[in-house]
Image (cartoon, rainbow, N blue to C red; front, side, top):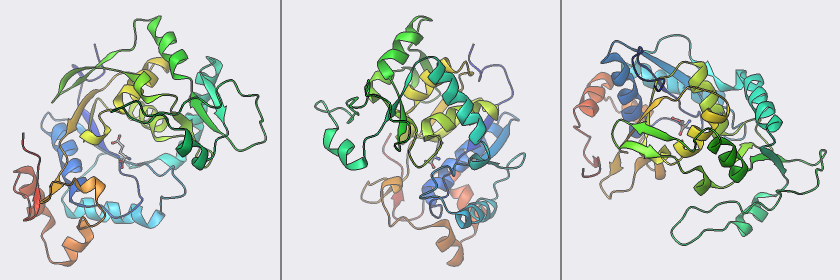
Length: 288
Ligand code: GLU
């Protein structure tokens, strides 16, 4: 039985405070809140601010203001990831203790040069530092030895399936992601590590988020298994697009919610329109 079945539904919206929210964020947050409320469940807010180079405290205030303007209402205090570093370190220690991590000294430029991308596949790190002599004083990231991790999980029947409410049962393929980073040189945990730990910590049963994160779930499912965390149900929703079909998450000219508010748009009416699939002129959902 997965974590999501037979329990009160708990969802979350987990923005990174790296800029102002846009319509795509509003759509995602509404989907998450409504999924929980439709079954009498709880909706939580988490601020994913561990990327110290890009996160800005002033954007946290902006996120709260924008979500309130849309009429969103979360249970509990919001969880701030930068207060959770000990939990990430404990998980790294546990994975390290299983012999699954190695230090990576590569610079961004070296990684860019060495990325191997088999035709049509995602570029993966080729494992340059796997087996390198440790240089503890040199700045390093921690990577997971994916082949080793998958082999360990296989002892318990993994890699495992996961369930998407929209796409159905999915087979996790963590090997396709290569040796992903779990702690960065400049951040104590990567997105992959922090997200699985905090979803479990917050008791999230249903993860509602954009379909651009669907592939990452392969890695999350493996980490949940290795760290003995419950498996949530997933719901990866379609991403809003501009009239040209380019998704909002990829473009830098998507109008911010703040700019719509300044232009006199009513946030609650906008939320109702988004729920009903009535998008402002110039936006659309992909054809089903
Ligand atoms: N913080 C991530 C983002 O803003 C979302 C993480 C998630 O929903 O899993 O893209």
